[in-house]
Length: 84
Image (cartoon, rainbow, N blue to C red; front, side, top):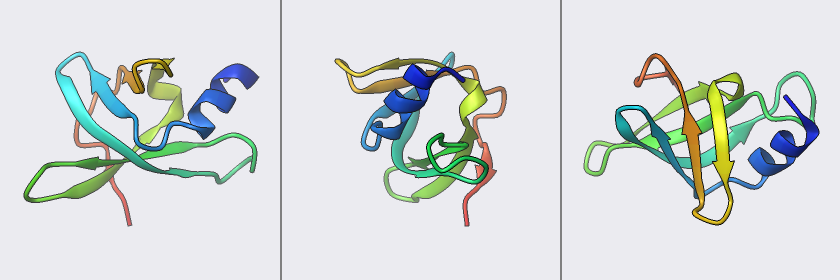
């Protein structure tokens, strides 16, 4: 991950997350495990009535559009890993 992408991801709370199938959810948190300056996972809230969170590895991020406040991923598993 480049420094620029790490910086963009560090400020993406509230951004919509999209993949090839459409809207995945909204970034509600970031997880830092290896390096305190580079997020490892996006915590994304999914659903409207039955909300749940999934973790998406940042290596699945294709683009961060700060102007449109969205993150585009190519995550193969729309369900991600359950957060918790």
